[in-house]
Every structure is written in structure tokens, then in C-alpha cells.
Image 1 (cartoon, rainbow, N blue to C red):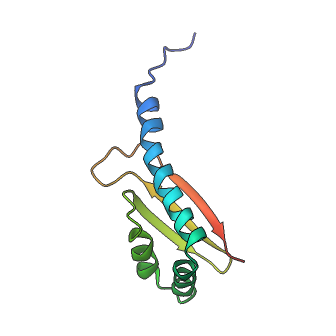
Image 2: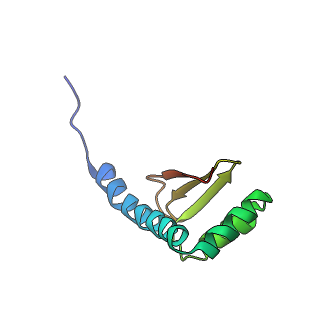
Amino acid sequence: MYPNVDITQFTQSAKAIQKLFKDATAISSKIANDPVFAKQLMEKAQQSKQEEVQKQLQSIGIESEINISFNPNTIHITLSPKKGESPCCQLTFLLYWR
């Protein structure tokens, strides 16, 4: 009735997303524990300096590909496996600043 399932890709995706969670934790920890970093990040975002915001986040030592957007209320961060790795998963989170 239903085809047999192959969990290979599914389990590989679950393993790969653990790296993304690690990078998300590094980002949230840096913002939570470094008020100077957080202030600089918000100021750059407020000035629509997308590339500078991205560079600042990457300066934390993020290994994942990072894609960001922001608006007056939030920063939207999407992490994906590095280029050259299997595009198996993504992790997206929002941090509200208003």
C-alpha cells in the first residue's frame, strides 16, 4: 500500500541541522551577552547596511551560510549548510528588537 521508506537523507539532514543549531546558539549567545555587539548590529541594520550586518554576524565564527533580512521590528536569520555541502536543511529564526 505505501512504499518502503528510506531514512538515509532524513537522518543526514538531522545530523547536518545540528551544525546549524550550533551556529544559531553562537549568534544568540553573542547578542545576549555582548551589549556592544548587539548595539552595533542594530545600528547597522537601522542604517540598512546589509553587508556589514552579515559580516558582523560572520565574525562570530559562523560556519554555515547565512542569509539575513531585517525590518524595524526584527532580524530574520536563515542558516544553511556551507556551499559545496548537500542542501539538506535550513534553520530560520527571528529575533525581535521592538
